[in-house]
Image (cartoon, rainbow, N blue to C red):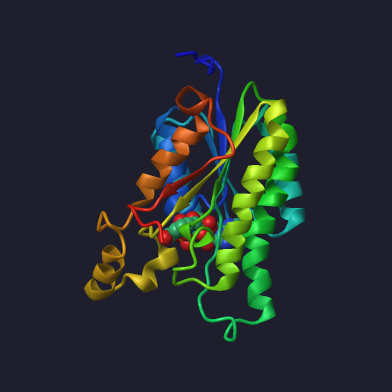
Length: 257
Ligand SMILES: NC(=O)c1ccc[n+]([C@@H]2O[C@H](COP(=O)([O-])OP(=O)(O)OC[C@H]3O[C@@H](n4cnc5c(N)ncnc54)[C@H](OP(=O)(O)O)[C@@H]3O)[C@@H](O)[C@H]2O)c1
């Protein structure tokens, strides 16, 4: 195997929404690889602090958290300015932060539509755009976007806004992969079905509801955040996936419709 990673050179990864759920599991997985990890969060500073402590305990050479609303361009510019003082480059960007809503098109109004699109789709655009100079400075770099089965099939419990935001992220991934390939950056996405996190807690908070969701999947399971973290690490690490770009990796326990 060609080792694209110089083991003496630090690797730096940033995970948006790293304070809880999939983002937290991904940040911890990266720390176990010995990577420096930066997480962002929106409001739960207590949870972010707990993750930073855990990252340090796992031996991450760098563990930082920033309060950043990914739909707020000023927050992202401040993040970039501060990161430029702290790290020489960024190897891995995981656009994970996201929100969900449900309800029919008649039930959701334009402000709910905009909020979901702003966080889930415009957020990754803004974060990627502003952190790109740091990624371009790295010896190798990779971007992973966290899409969803909701962007691939209409047969989900979330709203049209959520489905549109996650389908948009798939188009963003494919186009950006082509755009950045000549500059040495790979861009991929994961598209999970149900993952056991706060985001979907209301859909699985009784044994009956949980069973109903499990039954939707041929493998009869609900994913753990660690399942997604492992796939993100695979796509992030050039020693594991150097030939893969523009790919949408479905993590759906066999559910394709
Ligand atoms: N769970 C699932 O079944 C599932 C399935 C497919 C895809 N996904 C996607 O996976 C990603 C992570 O979801 P999760 O289930 O881990 O969710 P979660 O447990 O609710 O965690 C969401 C994370 O995103 C952060 N966040 C929310 N809004 C933000 C904003 N405007 N700016 C910055 N950060 C923000 C939260 O920060 P605070 O802690 O400060 O609130 C938190 O760290 C999302 O993009 C979601 O759509 C989830």
